[in-house]
Image (tube, rainbow, N blue to C red; front, side):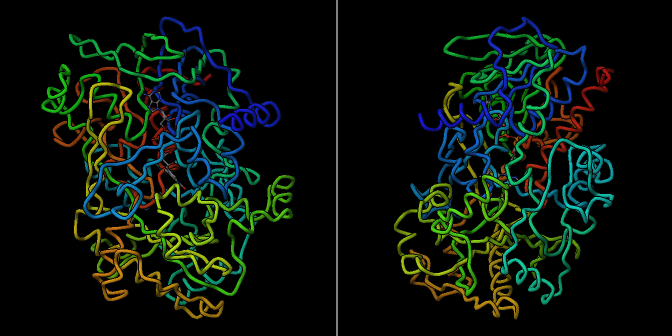
Length: 593
Ligand SMILES: Cc1cc2nc3c(=O)[nH]c(=O)nc-3n(C[C@H](O)[C@H](O)[C@H](O)COP(=O)(O)OP(=O)(O)OC[C@H]3O[C@@H](n4cnc5c(N)ncnc54)[C@H](O)[C@@H]3O)c2cc1C
């Protein structure tokens, strides 16, 4: 930790804008934003554009360091204090063979939130995802209505997409390809064509197809929402940012049912600050429902169990969704791949440090993705229900254990599976279930705000989710058997997963077992403060993201998604926050100055 602190100080003095930490607070602000994560940073920027409005941004963590900047080593950030390090409850159909038999749920802590530790892949989902939100009486959320907000935030750095009507060129968030292109990437894209798919821009007209990873990177470094939205505006006088400020409660007037402020702890001192116009909760899918419940907004019975006075009975914490994945599908290949040993190569290190180029710039090690439709899918023909992610290397190359640590993979699993692959070139292919039918829940473990809430994933509780995953694995095998991949000497490392050796290898039962033991999360938890109209018994916020029944309180983060779209969630949360900022400005008839 000392080393991290020293490096951070060194780096912020040289490379980053130091974010001033407010210690003296106004008694009242127009807007108080709880959580400076992906959504909170966007909101703080857009709301403080109104020079007449005062904005307080409260964040439990502190400023990012260059440790989180390197795209390839994203997994390393999970080992720092920038990760809340949550662990979910044991669940019947996933994660059973992982450390402690539970799923790791890393979440970012610091200005930038989970955009500080995520894998930077930039995807938005399918047009139909948003049209479905709108069709469920969430007016204003159809694809045509939200596309301008994706574009508003984006500065596309991919020349062939400059003229695309789907991309923005003037936003603060850089979206780029890395300069690194392996032979494997070319073979993977070709295999897609062999299988009848197009090579597409997944953020363009058609999601279905194979494409290179677009990522939130700027000149080879992570472009967090802190870099994009906060660092350029720290000099604004009307924006106060307070770090290491742990919000413990939203203060809601029980008579008028109006949010009037927040309570938080900073440097062991308790503060209460009032909000003149609104409190905006952007603490993420786990902490936002927790804070609502601690403040009296949630399922009545559950709050009473914890002796919390019920101010508004709402289904807070339900509808938890996530994209499911299976790690450990490893392929041996003849070409050179990326692994920990190679990363010690001084040429690559210097190339990265001085030019922002080379393998270190691959976002989380993912070079490309394919959006495909499983044979049994009940979705429309153009709607992919499965993503296949191509790794530039694989879990077998994780000698330093950073990826294992992130995923909760035991050393025993690693040695048994990959012990004999140490000198081999390998890559991984990862299936991702895009439209899960299973639902989990966040609930309170206690009324102590410093205790983690209970996180029940219920992954793959619905049998269709397991079936889709098995078909996704079979599609991965098809890709690996394609001519272009075989030409590279690709073959599946067919060592049985520990605990599933007794089953016929590659049978449906075998894959079921692998999923139960090693199936896990892609960390796209969402939906726990669901958006829906009055009268929808599962809704927590309305289409303006206002909490039903409570005045002057909005939720703006991944928790409001009614259904998780078929895309990685960071860009989607940024879009939600961009739109929310406009809605808030309209409510208060405040213009950007
Ligand atoms: C390992 C990993 C890899 C991922 N990879 C990708 C990817 O490649 N592409 C992609 O699109 N998405 C990815 N995601 C998901 C994506 O980053 C998240 O969905 C998104 O960042 C969520 O944004 P948010 O604003 O809802 O929450 P967050 O960004 O988590 O923000 C919540 C903020 O609130 C703060 N907070 C919480 N409680 C309190 C409190 N009580 N008081 C004060 N502050 C508080 C937190 O510290 C945090 O800063 C990944 C996620 C993880 C964990």
